[in-house]
Each structure stands twice: as structure tokens, then as C-alpha cells.
Image: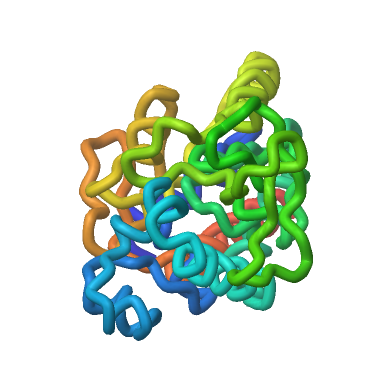
Length: 271
């Protein structure tokens, strides 16, 4: 067991609560694309490649005005992909750890796939800072109302806003997006503040959080508690925080073995 891994396992084992801060790298081991670079994005979406449409252009409110069918085709595919993909075993590890803690855990994620809820985490403990593909909003928007994403989406006949009949759009933060409705995230910030006021020894586990759009990293650092960072490339972090150069699933499996080894050591010492 490496020294860093041992120290990280000690932090996790001794914590009374966990704050899971997860970026796009959390979903990669489930088989989800992370859309880093045009080559990877266009490989996943050849029709967009044929037209030279970049991720930043299709994941953009203007796309729903300029080419709505193409925009909805892209998002309908993503929604179906996220619905049919099973979250990897690392989610189960995090769920077990949070369930074992006296004060449980709270999730902060930039992912819009709903996989933490799918893995069994209560929605009230999951703050999706960039929104969720489980909800729709008006593309105008004509108000702050949200409604559930339908089970079936036809890109040629996408759902309209029930209040003004304008085209709807997913309730996710896009590029150059001034119309995204953030009410769900704002409610979760308030829930987190009430929860965090009752915990005494929290630890942040930051997983797959990038540096290009550093929303998750900034939030993790703002909490001013010990951080265990899991990232295959951008893992470096100043002590007393700990960085592990691993992917999400690899890092969580390694930490689970280390935490279990510490438990067995303590159990043996007390018998």
C-alpha cells in the first residue's frame, strides 16, 4: 500500500461524513463519453462530424434556434445513453461509505446523467450544478418552471413548453447559456448548508474533476476540508490534501481495499 493511498484511506475511515465532488471523469468507467476534443466527440456523433458541428456549438442554446432538430437529436441520444448505461461499481463503493458514516454524505457534481440517483443516492443529497437531463425547461425561458423529461423523445417533434408553446430544451447549463434555470441547484446549496452545519469531520473525495471547466475543483477547494483527489492526469494537490493518479473506478477500488485493510487491522488489534 502506497503512503498516499494509506493516508487517504485513513482520512476516509475516520471521517464522520463525506462530500463527493465528481466531474466528467466519474462517468468514463461506465462507458460514457467525456467530449474532450473534437475527435472524440465526432467519433461518438458522426452526423455532427459530417457537418463540422463542434460540441460547443451543439451544446448551446443557439442550436435550438438555428437547427432544433439536430440539437434535439443530439440530446435525445445522450438521454437514451445515460438511461441505458449502468453506473460502474465505484458508485456502489461511495454509497456504502456514505451509508456507514454517522452523518452520511452529500454529492456535488457537474454531470447531468443522473447516475448518482440511479446508484441509490437520495436526490435531496445530490447537487447537480450544471443541471440534469431528467428535466425540461422553456427555451425562452418564459418562467422558472421545470417538468420531467418524457420517456420517448422524437427530435422531429420535440416537446414544447406547456405554458407558452415555445420549444423546450433540457434543463442543463450549456455554452454561452444565459437562460438556464438554476432553481434545483440553488435549493440543493441550501440543503447542503443545513447538512454541513451538523457534521464535524467531513472529507471531500474529488473524482474526475477537470481543469478546463473547473466548477467541481473550485467547489471542493472552497469547503476548506481535507481533499482526496482521484484523477489520472491532473491529480496534483498541495498537502495536507492527497492526490491519487488513478481513474475513478481504479482509485475507488484501491481505496476500498485500503479502507478494508485498516478496518481489519483495527479489529485484529482490539481482539
